[in-house]
Amino acid sequence: MYCSITTAGLCGIKGYPVNAEIDVAEGFPKLELVGLAHNSVKESVERVKTALKNTGYVFPYKRVTINLAPAQIRKYGSHYDLPIAVGILLASGQLEARQVQDNLLIGELSLNGEMVGVRGALAMVETARSRKLKRVILPIQNWQEVCFCDDIEIIPVSHFREVIAYLQQGRLGSETIELQKKIKHLSALQEGEEIGQILGISVNEGAVKKVDFADIKSQNVAKRAIAVAVAGMHHILLVGPPGTGKTMLAKAVPGLLPHLTREEMIEVTRVYSAAGKLLGKIPVITERMYRAPHHTITMAGLLGGGRPLLPGEISLTHKGVLFLDEFAEFPKVLLDTLRQPMEDKHIVLSRMNERADFPTDFLLIASMNPCPCGYYPDMERCRCSEYDIRRYHKKLSGPILDRIDIFVEVDRPALPSFQNVACEKPSQEYAGQIAAAQHIQKQRLHSENLLYNSEISTPLIEKYCQMDMAAAEILNGAYQRMKLSLRSYHRLMRLARTIADMEGKEKIEAKHMAEAFNYRVAYNKYFMK
Image (spheres, rainbow, N blue to C red):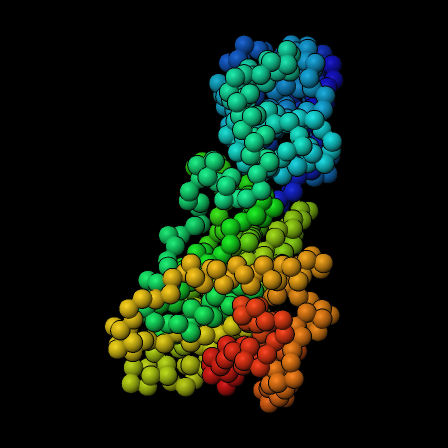
């Protein structure tokens, strides 16, 4: 007897429909699993056999053939347990189900029949929605992850027996009914912060203990530069000797960022779900991620890779902050691979016959010492030769520096100014300015489907980055004098546009352009030799 169960596979962060076809026929007892199944799928057969036995069913002593179609795509994951188990019961005549049609089934089975959470549930539910299916049956551990899906019925279950009870009689357990009510309520909410509060999520993986600007004495120039960077989502590089507060400044950035919108929350949660990082205490991503990988990270760890293809750090910081401390210590080839993801805001990875597209819309905060010993240009403390300093700076290629808008020196504060600071401006005040500037940008760029000034494409720059005569003279004169690249020229215009937005000005004025050029002084000092 033959039957087909609808399930889904996962490729990167996107799901695709899979039909689990099961045929139970007379003949020599044998089980064949075909359809380009990975070892993680092949192991499901033993789990299914034992789970069926421990829940009162019998694995058929016949010829059993299981095909996962389409057969040309390799299948990964343990979530095929549930559709295979249900299919075997149907094909062997042990189950007469009325509710199999229009269902998508995913879930791993433990040996006693309990459901186990799986990675990529959100992407697979979205696949069911795109296929016009009516409902999804999945492990109870994944219910919070899929609470955004408001136009498809979600049936979270904790045991295989609950699945059978529903398929045979349409009966749902009391816990499932309560969770469905919660899902319906959560799916109507729009703000990520509100959803996080209802789910009881306070701290996400990757979120750090936020530093307030009020805790950082002096460094007002760097604070202003970071505020401008966050307002327009401009990448920034902090240069300064050890112990001047570069890392603290970077850790203060999450406190300046706006809360995730509902759409952004879905995007980021989808990435973390595909990476298998949601099961446990953090079922949904409700805050912007802050990640700080060490400079010894591999290319696969930073960009993504492996089998199956999993997102790397640049995708795990999607809509968040990627902090690269000791920027010049990262391998040059690794930094150069960031050029395309920083520009295009996504990365396409290919391995063998697999291909996956991951989002990479992050804000880069990089920091580095001015020389190998860290104390240049303080010649009393610096032990580096001129050759050592130049070699150190050349670790950063021109193209990667061209993609950074703001360069700031973070100097050691003078003792009197450090001691006399009675009250530093808190992050909340900066956040208010940033929110106002971002609102202006979103209103202006709404028709272009853009959010921030850093996203303005070259053909649109003249339309949205209008300057007065004085600002244009400053920019054009500097272009000739400093021999700027066209990319740098356009980045200065976008940066000046953000500075003007922070002051609520319609046109870019001379002072805005002058401030934008001030954020290139450190670049000229260290990288133009």
